[in-house]
Image (cartoon, rainbow, N blue to C red; front, side, top):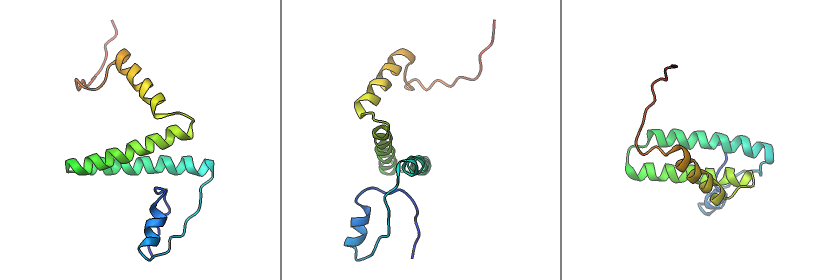
Amino acid sequence: MPTYNKLVRDLIPEMIQNNGKTANFRILNEDEYLVELNKKMHEELSEYETATTTMNIAEELSDLLELIHAAADYYGLSAADIEKIRSEKAKSRGSFERRIFLMDVEDH
């Protein structure tokens, strides 16, 4: 019997049951949820870093985006709140479009 001990999407237990198996799960409390949400972000980031096809990359980015939405919701923020801040930072500090790599800064 495989052991997972990780945060999964809401429909996973139902999908397991629909495949004729039994899923043992529990609902996390607030503190546990934040810890597991952070672990899941690291897991998905690692999967994104090793993805090799455009489809795999898109899937991992969508997983990361789902987790960002979940984290925002945890803190009482909406996707629109996050997008507004992202947009404001892009206007004031720029984005990453030009691929600038800062090596060092000299004092004068």
